Amino acid sequence: ANPVVVQATLLSTAGISSVKLFYRKDGAVYSSLNMTLVGGKYEATIPAQNSNGRVDYYVEAKNSSNLTSYKPFDAPSDSYYYILSDVPEANLPQLYINEFMASNTSCCPDENGEFDDWIEIYNAGDEDVDLARMFLSDDLSDPFMDRISNNDASKTTVPAHGYLVLYADGVTAQGVNHLNFSLSATGEEIGLFYYDGRKIDEYAFGAQNENQSEGRATDGGTRGTKFLSPTKGTTNNP
Image (cartoon, rainbow, N blue to C red; front, side, top):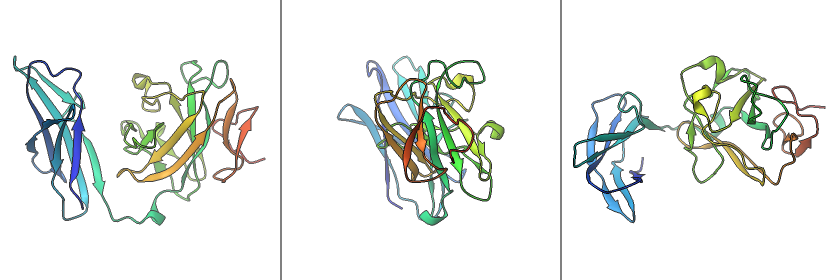
């Protein structure tokens, strides 16, 4: 495996006394690296690892008053991570961004009665797949935008040959099935990524009409279409 460069951007560098990167492999004791300021970002490099496994990492920033901030905020009990894996592409889960709505004003409310953007994932495989610790993003160049929580499998598991709806409302406090970004009605991309950042599926779209969805004309198919009557959480097949 190659070395991994981790970058961190601070809202302000005033009074900063140290910025450190902590990392570990497979649950071992954390090691620390001093992060250096390069081009407006702090960075450090996690050394190459020589075997498969999981690498956890987090960033700690201290100021001259010895106040400390972490990213993620509750580190080290939580951390970012990446997977070193030789799982071949062919063995990635058969998941598809099947349907979505990016301009919702009166259709398909969430569990709180709010009209959020939403994304439906279809599982074409024969086994249930828990999306926990996988990633969704509306920027294909940033695959790690939103790591799906592992706190409630009942809300993050896509049943075999079934569907799961996640709400792209930017309000993660509403539950593990709510994402930290919303969709642009003017058009953008949606990407679903494996634990290690490999892309499972993507969908690019243009401008959207209010309360209409877009997705695959058939479940997991290659042709896209718009739905005047959205089929959120159910089959797209005619």
